[in-house]
Image (cartoon, rainbow, N blue to C red; front, side, top):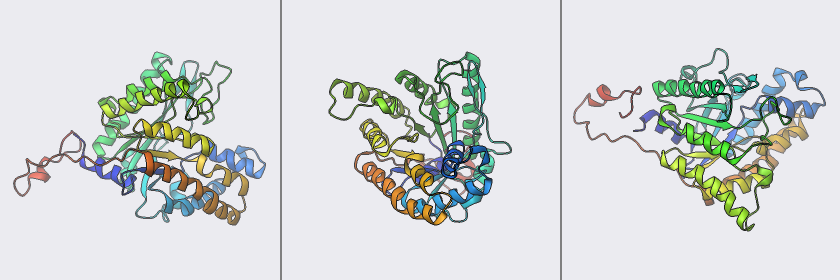
Amino acid sequence: MSLIGKMRGLARLADADGHFRMVALDQRPPMFEALAKARGVTKEDVRFEEVVAAKRLLVETLAPHCSSMLLDPNYAVPAAIDILPPRCGLIVTLEDHRTEETKGGRRSRTIANWSVDKIRALGGDAVKVLAWYRPDADPAVVAHQKQFVRVIGDDCRRNDIPYVLELLVYPFAATASHTADYVESPDKLPALVIESVREFVKPEYGVDLLKLESPIAVRQLPDRGAGSSEHSAQAAFSIVGDLCREHGIPWVLLSGGAAKEKFELVLDYAYAAGASGFLAGRTIWLNAVQSSFPDLQKLRAALKKESADVLARLSALTKEKARPWSPRYPKADIIAAEGDFARIYNPVRSGL
């Protein structure tokens, strides 16, 4: 049975209609690359204060138009926690963007000196973790990633805070398509995405909300009305939806920097399969950042117009087609007298 704190946290992430219309601002390498391109320098030359300035503007301009925001603790939280509106849900990143790359696969780790406890202490509504995952990776890597996700799930249960898990397929180091960039894997297969979801919907991981990529490579996703190819693509999304529904876990789509028209198509397929919203970043703000930085006034104007317009379109599609989510609180029929609730409530175990 779901815990009270987790339900209240998820409710903070959604809007009044039960849709998750969320903006991701926790990107680190993609943000470094965007600012570097805008300035005509290498990403190693991007300064801390430039990242902070850009992220503060993103929060300032986009927070009024979304249900919640995803911030990282190294840049976005110190940049803009003071201007994040009280009604806007706060998701905080736990994973480090630096991973251990091996021939057999990629190992994730948490940000140094950061924890679920600290996220709960600063008032976060949810913990987000990206786990790079391939079920066909080396067994030792697979075991490491499962344990990585499981341990964080235990910490989230103990703190009674929602656990948002992002899963991404990646190319192996020995392949020609290998890259450490945050881009869609060119050799991604539907089965890799589906089997990843099948694993992490298991109760042992304690996941409360899944942030997922399209099971079909975005560039290969057929337009609506494409006949058999459309039906095949929808079937892959439906398997994901069935797995999440079976385990009572809502799911949302990540954008992966896709063009807005393509991401709208991804959402259309996902919403037909039961997804409840999006947690998107670069699709919303990348072009504005690359075309306007370091002129902060120009960037503010671009975000208020171009990025806000993209977000409005995604929100309209979500309200029209996404499956609403609603909290499910544990029954309190065993509460009969003063003190019963305080005695029984225990976030470490399920139930009250």
